[in-house]
Image 1 (cartoon, rainbow, N blue to C red):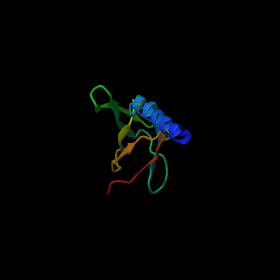
Image 2: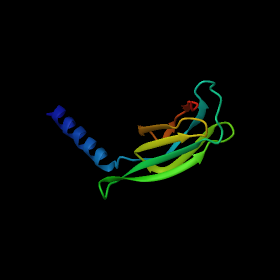
Image 3: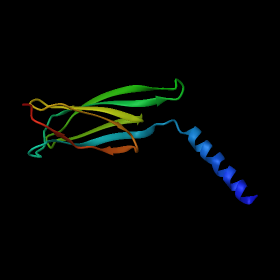
Image 4: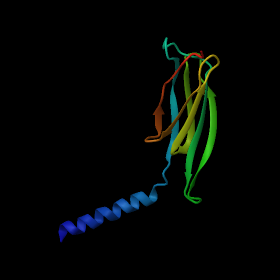
Length: 120
């Protein structure tokens, strides 16, 4: 009897926590370095374009929020969003091939370094 009570209590609490979640992380950031794949030297002024997907609980679908930044002299970039659940990322720099990746967020603060290949 007592074990059954705790089992149902735990299921109920899990349901409450799940229903309160909207699928988004808040204060989302993506940061890292853009480097040459062969030399591992930084690539300054690389363009980092991000589409951050935000789940809208009223519409039951995801909306996109687009932002772009340039890496600094040390190849470092940082981009922030209010909230999000996934990202599509495109990194580009002249004389390098573009790098594109999609990620599902597992936390608010995300670190990702990009290694770009020289164009042939």
